[in-house]
Length: 199
Image 1: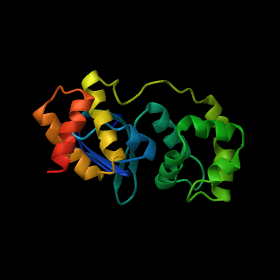
Image 2: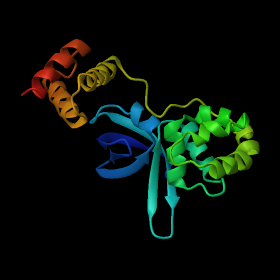
Image 3: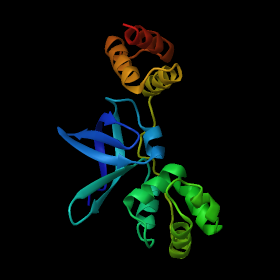
Image 4: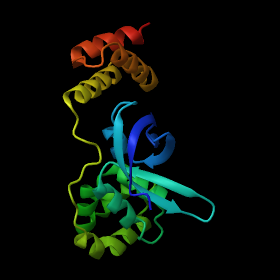
């Protein structure tokens, strides 16, 4: 099984990423939680992975933490829960929140999620309650602690999105700004990126 990927983030969307590992692009489905933690395009990233085997295809799923991956695998053991449903659930709540909901038998927390009906929620509660209490989560983030430069780039990207620029425009402008001044601080990066975005 592919345990994790370490490489360059070359594509990302709310549902899928592509990581270049030694010249090979690996496409992986991701949860909303993992997507929010991704660095800007062109940055190095590490994702924990799960390879799902079907009769007609292979599907790769990527996660920001081992905790999220283990919860995903646990969800798949519940009756009637497939990868898409598991991904939907973990996009609506993080692994710790799901663990607490199952232990507390909080059906509403699950049924409030789009695409999760009462029967599915009940099956998850029944099938996972004993397993989930035995699951020991390790704190092991997939995405490395950001350096000052990486943090500046991340903050600049967030600022561009907050200003209303579409993601493709923000990413392109930020790449151009980084190429112009690789070690720029966040304020300078934003100014440079704005200039490129408006060009």
